[in-house]
Image (tube, rainbow, N blue to C red; front, side, top):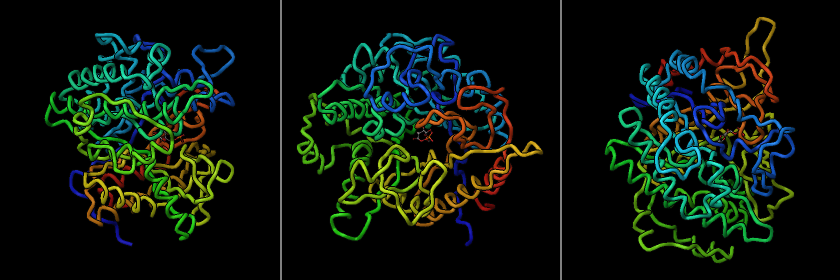
Length: 475
Ligand code: BG6
């Protein structure tokens, strides 16, 4: 199969996120965020799901985000490695609580601004375009405890103040922005996604969709502000992507898959098309959800994004008989296990053609440029006797997905770029493990925080360097 042609100027690179890489969780004036409260081990899941209040840190728990991979102190070394691979784009996020430690202050913390100024300038030094997410799974904890996080409309004010600060402080350094990482994860992992914690007996759907409305308003306002500050700014939404396949051609299964897709696409329907989709009134009625809106909200939502970004790890699968027992939450969103595809060590499906399918569906639906900002294989890596890491499995996963993305481009879809997830090993969001590695660069650290944090190139490092140098031709 010949490789598809990637357009000139196609952005190649990788992605990290503040909450999984920076560490330094109390340095530089940073406040605590949701991720800082999520421990490693069995207590992790109930906290992530918002089923358990953990508003204080415990001495007997290990919190992987506190040190993470220490990008805060090692960003120069890490960005130099990215430059060596030939990156033209690096995706990361700003930790909201470095700029606004509590979240509701009126003025930002200068140390936080100085840190990101230095990071983005370092990227520019190498000609690397930063792609920056404003909120990647890290709501300031003070906003959770004092305001109930996104269930409260006041969050719109706090977030837009923070967003304006970012657009103004980093104007000229950052052009590509994302508002909320995987915004649909709010439904599936409400505390890590949006800082939501539930009271016993309340209608969780009501809370989730009211919070969703606030995030959608905040995202639309941030988009407007970004364009006001600099008309060259490009703002994207971000979907945890992957189409649902029907389990069979039984009409009920096809309908179930369509409904499951809508559950996630609802967010992007609003952010990319500027209004609540036609099906939403019926869905809210069935869930007993009533969304409080304010005059002018419909106008605000018309501030649509410039491009649609998404993560893709695997496709999903649904049937009319799908339930708690026959589905599992590989990649956070629950799915039936598709027998036609293989799986990673963590049970996540491997389906490159699903990427082409997903991209075609999204472009058909939104008619906006796409940006694939997360993709990769979480795998255990071994250092061999020669001190090398032969991660051929990772190369093979990425090669097949780059091919599929190339096919989607050949289908006529405009694609801005591609950032592989965890280009340098980082803490896994779902499990908090370090052993679930995605990187071209190995980081010496284990699941309990032992290790020197030394960086080491894997075999995939040189492979990706070659892919970038050939603009996707030499896979
Ligand atoms: C996405 C997130 O859900 O998937 C990342 O945006 C996350 O933060 C990535 O790390 C991979 O998931 P995991 O659980 O393997 O880290």
